[in-house]
Length: 326
Ligand SMILES: [Zn+2]
Image: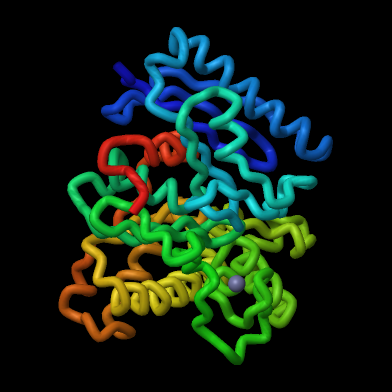
């Protein structure tokens, strides 16, 4: 009787694997640094080794429901095809799910990491009790997942839910990595915050700021964490950068609310750790930019709960009850 799911988080710096029971509890985990620069055969071999070791710890494959994997896009969850993840050199059009399925004789699926994280937050994280949720993670990029009736919305080709690449400013001078101008990712992710702080400090080169001290004058080294720390000490420029980030995210999330009418929004990622000042500005901005004002004013904005092992939970959740593909 299957009672465990293998969850594998495939990333450019680490491969994290775990055994998750059907109630969503992590019973075993293991992490190896990805030898990404050695190419596909090596990193793929590492994934197989992690799975093998987890199957041994589970006492054989009889107790395993399936092997769920998550990886950065672009990928197609419907076919299990990983197209060309930028941080995994040598990976080109790999039918990852099929290969793993053949190797272990167990069902296997691949999911986009933000979609998977969103589903995991709904099944056993911040959004337990909700069925229709918009998930966003803000760190070096902005990843999103659309969860409808506790299932991931994939769209026709499996690539739906790329909310980070919705533009909120077609006249923006900032071109996103995807090629579009003014994507929310190009305006509000960590690197964009750092860039705005740097530009501002260069323009107002006489204005004192803790950020100058924290970087010892090397403004190219500003990080979102430094902005957070400086703002916590009342630094006016750092506070304004956070306000502006909250404003951009608020305008964008208001659009997502108008479009999707979700029950709740889960916000995770390193930038979300800024907490109250950021969330307050998002909350204040949302009602001004949506048609759904009354509801939007009180929509739950939930900080993500699954932090360290979110990738493992996300990968496993595609095989957990109510986590099946739509
Ligand atoms: Zn983009």
